[in-house]
Amino acid sequence: MKRKNPILILSVLAVVSLLGLGLLGRTNHRVEKLRKSSLRARIKSISYVDSLKSPSGNDSEPQSLMVKLKPVLSGMDVKTLFQSTGFAEIEPLYDNVYRFQGKDSLVPLNDLMEQLRNNPAVELVEKDVVVRAMEVPNDPYFLYQFYLYNHGQTLNLTDGTVVQPKSGADINVVDAWTFSKGSEEVKIGVLDSGADYNHPDLRNKLDAGFNFVGNNAYPIDDNGHGTAMAGIIGASTNNGQGVAGICWNCRLIPYKVLGADGKGNYSNLVLAIRRAVDEGCKVINMSLGADEPSIILEDALKYAYEKDVVILAATGNEGKGSVCYPARYSSYVLAVAATDENDLHASFSNHGPEVAVAAPGHMIMTTFPNGQYALVTGTSPATAVASGVVGLIRSLKPFLTAEEIFKILKYGSDDVNKALFPGIDIYLGWGRLNANTYVAPIKVE
Image (cartoon, rainbow, N blue to C red; front, side):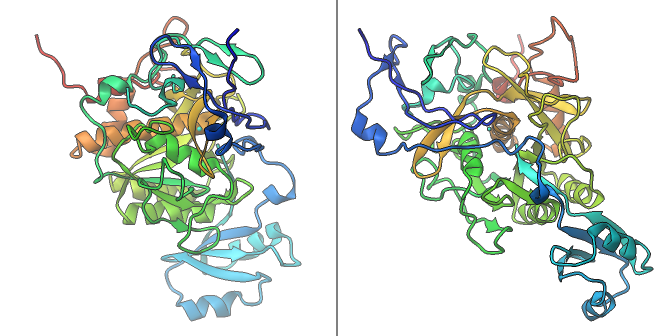
């Protein structure tokens, strides 16, 4: 009797332990044996919690404000004007926008907001909202990546569950690689929890980024979410190890906006968006979200869009009819929903009129810190899949504007739920991504 090998599972919907990973045979699609020594050297027990669900507790409440001042004050005037308002710290963000830190103040934040709104020097006051994380080459785990190439292969999970994906429920990227494997000229900004710069499948793909949480030049991943998203977008491919990234040659730039707990705030997200644009990123991945709007955040997204940067963000993982921010800003952002291994709308994927496209988001094989690999689930990995595809498009057709790429993604996607919802709908938008349709030359008979 053949022994089943465990597959490493990381669910972004629940806390799970990471136990092991097997290889799927190329010839007869059976699970091959993997030497224990090579497996256990990379795998250890880990727990992980999805941060794209609604936060709870006091640590999810904003502790600071974003304040836009009227352009009449110098830096010295700002400090003088607000030194007696009760804020622990006043920090310039950009232009005339500041972060007012109220965490150590004895005055409630709402009262401080009211004080500022009544100040004639203040143009706009917003809470600094908490955001949360929202996941045929020779790479040995490639045949577990059914979202890239799905021929109906069997996945044997650690709990004994056998998953049989629907053949063809993938983004058709193997055919797309014939035309585009990405370009080093295309930089993709990954705004997340950082990345593992020493991971064997990432070390040659990551450029210098920035840590906005620690305010330093070291965006090291102390959570795992950012490493997972980076691997989906552009892990080293055809290198004989690990997984295959979607955009083989694109460069990845991690901007750390989420801490070890998978949470961050709008002010750092705004700074990261602007920095990514200014440092030449043509694609920005935001596998994160929050429930409150922000004019300052929207301004940053508009800034990026007007610079022809394609921005993608996750719709959220609560299965509700409300898309998270920043994905809800559909004038500037592509909101990405998730499908499962059967090309159906994933039950956890938030829906709404802002949804533009969908991508596979269930059991997505990717990189994880300390040289490990994991399966992740959520609209986070779905967004990363979409960002990798956009990287392929931007590499092949650098002359396209962000608006034109929006249209290509929408009108070239597969309407996989047309039997129930023909055309655009609130669940999958224009449909599930089809990378080959976007990059293959049009054949004229």
